Length: 82
Length: 177
Image 1: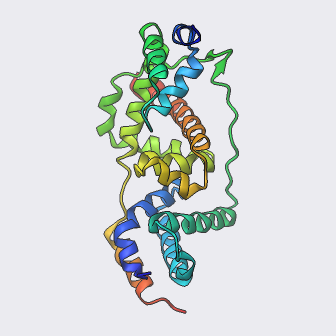
Image 2: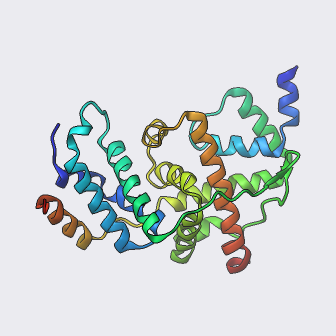
Image 3: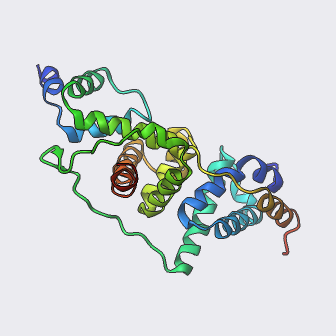
């Protein structure tokens, strides 16, 4: 009964937390069901989920170290001054 | 242990650099601090004995070097306390982002995201960068930052809320609409 209640009444704040958690590890069955039910009727949270996905993909495109810097650091660490 | 800074640089250089860049927002400073960290690691290689993961160890050293640098620059970032929810409901519901997936190829958008990351409080930025930028496994991020799984989950959650808000305010609110 408590489980059904959670599935039916999950607040946005908890749904948001679950949508963050699901990016790192699979949710429990109950949480998954509660979130799915919540998303059926909540446009704001549906947007939030999409936004998190975009942020996650965009974050992975950060720039690598330049070749110049790599060479310079490589020299510095292979011949430390002291 | 095999003490080979050239190999550390080869295998972990990009991770360390991006981590430093996300905090210092300056390429030269980020490169310098990576170099300092590798030299520091070389000097203290004996401390590594018994640790399982080189990357985690190097990140720990790098974080100290970054903290020194931030102090020198007089930069610290306070934790912004913003209320996203009122009694469980969105205080300001997420807005409609026009074609968010279409922004992924946009260099300016990625730049804006980097700026938003640089505004995160340090404890949240560290968690977000290691997990989302570097894609480190969850447990490795916990190890690197000395956090429990629940603590890390909370930090990632707050980081994501703040980043989303920052992008909505500074990109989707003005540039795209």
